[in-house]
Length: 86
Image (cartoon, rainbow, N blue to C red; front, side, top):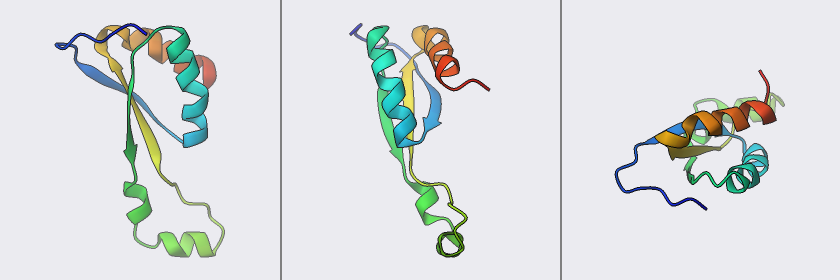
């Protein structure tokens, strides 16, 4: 994998469901794009989430935030669009 430089700025390329992230990681590795991940569990604390679960509304859960060095952002965004077209 291409090493990130210490002075690189990191850009977030998306917030993904865990199953979506599992599809994205191998592509980033294949393209030798360095990446870092961070968990976002803030949606688990949403008010009235328990009611949404009770009524079967399937509220948002945890997300995985994916970051790449700024110099790789364009290539990484192209991979995201190839996996998840708009």
